[in-house]
Image (tube, rainbow, N blue to C red; front, side, top):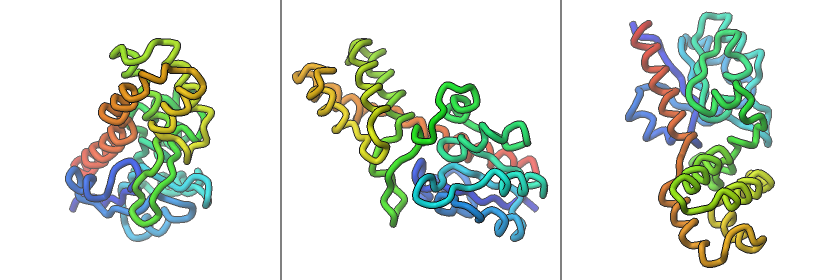
Length: 219
């Protein structure tokens, strides 16, 4: 009998899109004191992608360690999962994706790198995570849409912006207002960012799902 898996997501990838990759029990972003229930129900693989950050208690280290001690495989990546995996990989939690690697290696440190404001009914993000902005601005620089100075200025502006207020439209408008980019480049930069966004959180979420799928097949 195949191992049962539960996946906590909704911001980085929708449940509908995730089901196209893996058949599992999909739950909203994880919060404190949820894991034990699923361990007791017999789930042998837990995938943590998204989780509650600031308005309610985040999933705790002890409850993940308790699941690991019970023999449950716990995979994390993309968002809250990446953060917890970087902290608990030495205890057996499995990390997947670049965001996990960045946290693990100290490239990024703040929780707000992956935090987004969401629609409470659909979990869909209504702001842009900083990790996505980082990679998208880097792609804009490599493609020649912005200079190195403009790239660094816009990135610093994004870092200094409160996470629920981060958007590409707001970034280019404020960037032009502050003189970080010329007014005449606003539309071209915005079109690039919205049309060619590097959605690193979604890419990593897919890696989590594929990792969980492999664990199920090997069980």
